[in-house]
Length: 148
Length: 438
Image (cartoon, rainbow over all chains, first blue to last red; front, side):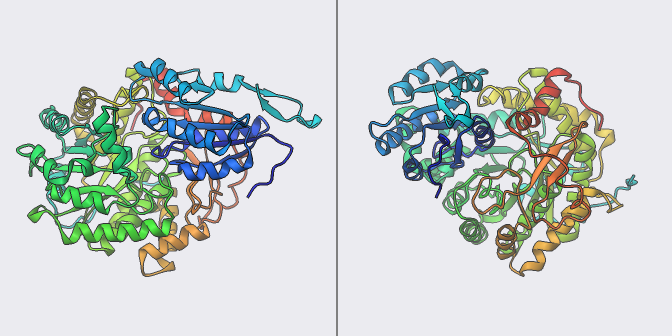
């Protein structure tokens, strides 16, 4: 079990049916470099396990999925995080290939925003747009990174 | 430099319909090409298979299952089917084997065998349904469908795959016989040096054999350097002949499984290079990727176009074809030496291959680079050199002769370097989509 440190905390996970992991390996490295203590929950993340790790009180929960099933499953992920951290200021974001066709991305973004995600990132600039929301402060001053 | 001399790869008599078809085509110098294709409905799947059968190529059919079925969440698959939400494959358990059999009527047969591709770490239920559907060929493995893709503990996956082999063997679909392909040549799809891919695939086939499956195939996924790939397939054949011979085996190459070129020209060039690799090395079967890969799930027409492109390429280069299951006469390639060391290290651990595999991963004797599964040591790292050749940046605790001293010279990749390596093939083929020289 990780102990809460001065660094902000990020959880990286996927939806229960998605077995891809390079996206998760990459996001873990990226968040670590941005100053987050990062716990990578791995592919096919079960909702119960995600809820359990929410006990770390993460500053950001990053859900990444590329199998096209997020449209169906991600609302349950949002519900699990919101239920585990009621009323808390956690930034919950999702990105990747979230439906089976890129034509649906606007509809899916609206659906997942309504389901409780603070940010929905798809398309070529997804990572750059997400990274821009990570406001890095001087870690030496004890601020660490935080989500803008 | 090793000198190449081809000889027969010591393949025993075919003992399944699937293998008999592939081996007969190989004997005539033809490459069998196969899609990854899963349609959601019975009618859609039937139409997709008919289109593959009618393609101007030597094909076998594929039924790829959806992700919900893969993880055993049949309720979610049923719900998606009911509500019209898209599934990314064919939910064989929800449809049922008997309904699937009806949908296949007049489509599958000795001249067009069909394989189920599923991705499951616990596939017994899937095996029961595919046998009911009259299908005798499937794929996967206790390592290759557990560590890279599943949350299941490795020891449990090994137990489940023992059961699955028993299901296949005890209830084979009549005289069609059963065939099982190891997916061990893929692992995470990229950034794994070939020796580990080769070792895992041969070891999984040994596991299948130990549990009564007599007809198997070893696999290798196209990597990032053509010369290294040719060497790796040679090593795969030599080691399959050594450890599986004289059983019924053949080999299958997967077109590049990593980040795919986004241009049509780049995607086609990767596909053609994989077809040339398969032809040159005497591989029996090629599983293609499509030009749509980087953007969306491929449609039937995308698959047919890719199958015909691969077939045309194979026919154009027919004169280069190595004999079926060709092996390198010289057994001193880097991949051969490393893969053989890994296989022998596992076989020495236990007479039971499954036990040996579990212990090997526990001790880091096998260690898949970047694999996040808790039962993988995740100490090994790989890196690409300027020519796109894969090297070990760290070997963890793997007993790899000759690389211990060199490993560790390379700094662990940060996110930017990792992304750069993951994007190597996409960049290379999108920028200069000329096929390499095999």
